[in-house]
Length: 300
Ligand code: FDA
Image (tube, rainbow, N blue to C red):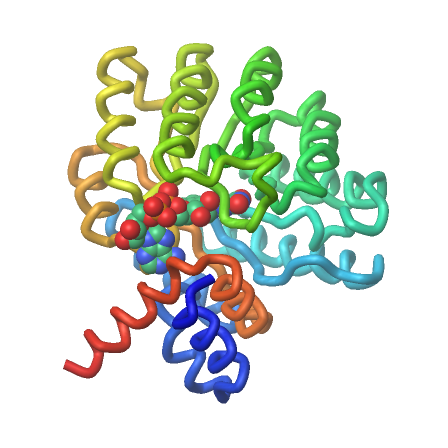
């Protein structure tokens, strides 16, 4: 972590909520479900899809997990009520994965069943490496009887290509991203190009085997590579979509949309935005640069 980044993270922790909100508001739809609905309606009106995430991560009690499930259920109700073109992304530790895997399985299963009744879909986000196996286990158990669930693989993880080979055999709906957590060198590639190479190699393996892939990246190199691969392999448009985070590289997301490809935007919202923003700052030194850039752009 650079001196400047350490300083910014420390300063952020002292920042009044209002100041941190100033930095975070482009990346977060708002504090309430109604703010997320507004953002999704706007995206839908521009021809883009959304995946909605209620902010919050590892919880300490089963009661908190039940609340998280209730909140996700409310999002599905809103999707139906407002006729939104959206699905829901969840963090498994928010559903109790760090407390009891079977309990988390039951909660996520309940959510997937509800989504199924509404003809919708649940994406299980991938968190840090202590939860990779348990997340994949939960996904596999649910997927056996419910096809409206998908999982995420991270190209910085050395195991990912082999996970894709395994999960291709059951026909998985993936999101492929680089990965955001800080992982040990024994488990994860650190070199930028190695992460990109693993991304492209894994994407090819997924697409060639006829899986559905959410290509989640803002990296122009990977986007160009994905376009090329899709053309070379002649992949049908109903076998992939692009995915980006709210407020990031809107120039690229508009280009993808204009090129006639499906693009889904990750829309996080919720009262836990403060902890989420601080965590993202600590975990991803690159964000420091983005925030500073935004700050100076604003002051011009
Ligand atoms: P890279 O980090 O190289 O970014 C490329 C360019 O995009 C940057 O140069 C910058 O211009 C811009 N950019 C990227 N991130 C930005 C940001 N936050 N703010 C401003 N500009 C930014 N990770 C994970 O571990 N588990 C998960 O489940 C998910 N889920 C997920 C869903 C979706 C839809 C996306 C897009 C991403 C995730 N991620 C994730 C995060 C992912 O792993 C990764 O950390 C980020 O997407 C950044 O990686 P890029 O591929 O965009 O490349």
